[in-house]
Length: 386
Length: 203
Image 1 (cartoon, rainbow over the protein chains, first blue to last red):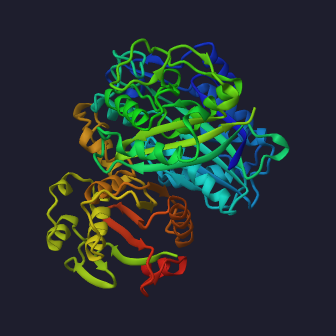
Image 2 (cartoon, helix red, strand yellow; image 1 turned 45 degrees about the vertical axis):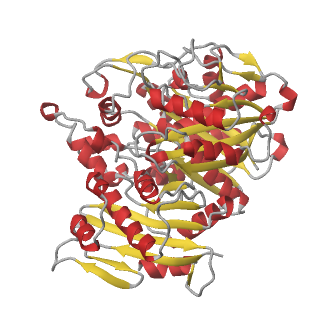
């Protein structure tokens, strides 16, 4: 068990968790139509973070820092630093300590630098992003990058729990970050995975996913100091389908094995809700419904937050864990925006309405589930503290 | 306690399996992964679709899994794959970027894009050998036997895996840098899985 003692979200809906969560509660989505953005020919739907706002917020942090840290940071680097600094301030801990480690969760980092001239050649490496993050806080422990496709955000939290449970560290900051670029958007377009309208997870008329940019941070601690914890991480599992590199298993083998492991010691009545990956692609949502159904978890309310944020890849697991924890503490299950009629073959409990958690006292747990390329599947079991 | 049942090492000019050189490139040339594949007598047509990182990782895994006589047909929930590198999927990122950079020559390809994720190599190895335990990919600035040791040890402890395929799989600038190890919970006098031994096998 480890405790989340500070968190932050930087995304299209705001620059801190309260602001972002309050927008979601008011059913505001960050997803918008983008035309000509990044020099991509076809229009696409995405939740972008305003670059001038990132610059302004970053400059206010930057001024209070030493000259040695002055350099031209990229949007990706600025977002991850803003998010980490805000979360660490909330946690009220010293991020330069020997007992503190950074874990960065990202798939593509600064990949858009590949198309540009005159940049430091090492800035495109994911480890360099993590190093810049640690350096900003004066932390000298080697940072770890988790790059496990779209399940990275759950894997990074699992890696943090192993660091903490083994006694290697007392605090771990899990920072998930991703920005969009011509590289990423054109790739998803080539896969014909993008929807031309707002995505509709699990719905009959779903036509694909929306992309999104975000940086999200959770500072985990080995103990619940002064009851500062917002939620607790209980356990996690990562399993491979061993089936296909870009399509999920038809029998949901990997995700079923994940859920089977995760719910070994608890009953389904104890789980308030499952926050699914819910990308709104035909195959992903169908596979998730099979995994939930095979695991006998059909009665548990299921939702997807992708219509609010788009698919933020390496940041998704961190961002969606934070929003789900706020909802769990408030005793509610957020609705799946845009869902009207089930378009998956298994009967699972999806709703477009935000509802109170029934039998709340009996259901302190919630599950965050993810699936991605390379046959990877992951989920984590979390517990509310309020 | 886990032991290193078998290991393979691929560098710029040769491949070594369990301490014996199984293939060397011609003088001064960098190793060609397709030549290596043919030399090893492997029959797996999917190999030709893979990017360089996957090819290098696949060959590293293939040799030691065969050498250890591991069952590759039965689905295995008790085997994990934990890999590390420094350049992520940069070799294929550059290849994909070349297909989109120039507007006059804009042909984004899904079969190139899919390999722009570091962990696809773990998926390719999992598919080939029906490995259904944990699969994880981590990126570090440089090879670190102590981090590899501690992350793999913690992983196997949590998943209770009986076997782990783990190590370093990197490829950039026509140069593979691979050290793959097959760990098993046996006690037959093989090499113990320790940070010191990982370092010896890499250097």
